[in-house]
Length: 271
Image 1 (cartoon, rainbow, N blue to C red):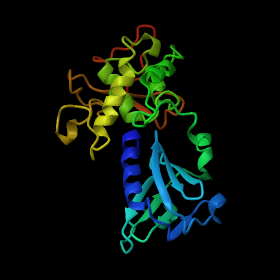
Image 2: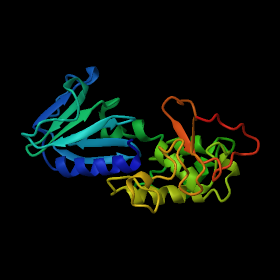
Image 3: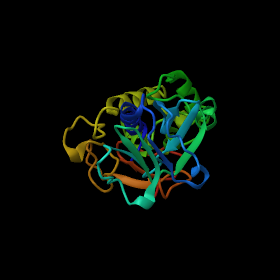
Image 4: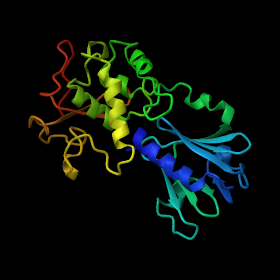
């Protein structure tokens, strides 16, 4: 699942492959960009911003993309067969003499002036893996709505940019807090942005996301993906429930023993 660490690595690979070279091929397969041709323009940089990708070209243009749940960019050698999915799922092709980047199932693809990038990323909070990281500002934003459930506050990209569902579940577990705890009731709330930063930094160069000390593939995460299985710390079965406005996409995992529910909140339904 693409989160800030995944997007950071992807931006690095795309930048290494494309930056400094002119495009020899450009094919943007969304209706509003169908007539756009960036062939001949040099790729200046591929920059991550939270979970957003910004591909900058000479002439002051930026191609903005977002992977959401299952989008992907794949890199291929010029003669290599494309294997990222069927052709009808391709939304963008950016080719240079040495590499071709193919964007599959991209739910967001926009072309804008580089000077206007704030139009698509200006709402984001401090980027956990970016040069603008500011833990004090991140904490201020988290606590601006003290009654909001911790899980929802961590997922809100306007607070901290780069956290997705996996890191939200793991952070709540490591904080020993229920995802339904009001964020203003979190003991030592400054630990939340500090721990989020540490987790994403530790995972930005890892091929397999890991939040536990274990090297075993089935024990890399404390609670995420472990529905009904024993908590790695106490043995209590891990529970799941939907949380927030998009509960069909956001399944929260937590241990009811290590993360007891807040006294005044209804216990989420067991699943």
